[in-house]
Length: 573
Image (tube, rainbow, N blue to C red; front, side, top):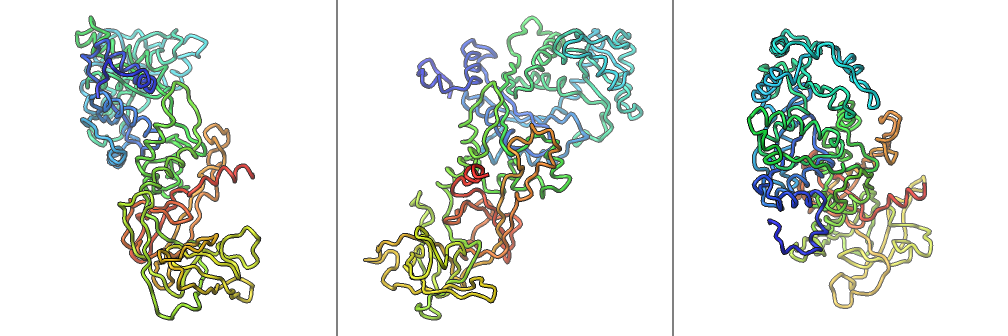
């Protein structure tokens, strides 16, 4: 909805600083009061939750002000890009709940950018440099020392034009030449010291094949692509603050090139920067994420321990929980390290409203109801979600032989142990009150079976069945359950801020980040479930069926526990 003059001061205070700047532009009538943003990922990896913050901003601003957000793939480096990443990016954005106006590629503008670069050479604004990368880096100077002009800086335009054409041939050697803008080698902003515009790359492009051998750099392609598309607000993260003067300078050149230089401040993109999303016990560097995948520290980009959206989706995070988390931390001009526990709290809050409650026993021990008739079964009514009555109920079968959690029994229990122990009563959820009468052990003293008797008049829902007992246990019928594998996840890294640690990040990986339980039992109702269905294993946590599952081998990923136990464990440590 467009903002109007009757917005209350409270509404104004709730706007992010980015939205405040957008509203200022709207009030001044800039860009014909049009709002157009873009999300420009490079298709060289999978999106992670840091990208989700940018997505929420780029798409959210356009949505809020009746504008449009386009998707543009920054495919200017074919050596790192492929269609797999493009397809996954499209899926992730849709999964988060956003819709783009158009799909563009930086490669759509290769001809335009080339012609623009040729014009810059002819005008004396650019030249071909044949120094090595090391020589250029040295010649650029330091933030406190001015750079020295390249020996090729004043070469004739005709010579640079001929070499520029040569750069786009298969015969040109990678690294032998670059095209540089002729700007200011003494500028305190290092990005202004004759930045590289084009370099030679012979890797075939995923869209254009072998047509091009010379590709534009991000700083040259990005602002121009924004301008070609009519972007009004180019919203990006704080590391692009020093790039902004160069962004604006190239747009100035472009407006001179297309004859609109007299109107520099209208109908041009405005770059706005906000803080990146950083999480504890997590790395967001795409290079490091590639290493984790390529060196098999994780099972793939969608490993549930990864901060990728595909990993979080597989683990069982909902898109709403991610968006709610991003809304809660907000947008500022200062980088910060956010506690991953805040994300997990947002996940719990959302899944509590939508997850189906089911019974699953992860560390089973047999419970035999000795006075329950042999061969008899009953269908007990289980509420799917107490937070939403419309979700209804499902049946769970009760029988003489059950599985319960091993931790729910203690033979010699302390006074405040309110679960099962000899002589004490507990309620079996949705079923009966039972009293433990004893247990059986093997030769090593391990408990192999627990015995109990049930009270036939204590069935849940029966009149007079509300006799108070202090413990309620979940269970599954031994003859009416499915065997399952359960994968439980801990922090991927063992240090709070691995990105700031000077050690090799591989050394910081948590060796206990994955625990696999293979002898678990779940109620047979879960045979109907599929990946994408949100589940709560009662008294344990939230889970989701993994795509690796088969009919005879169900696999569940633990999304998050019912409570934040990490903080307590951290305090102990």
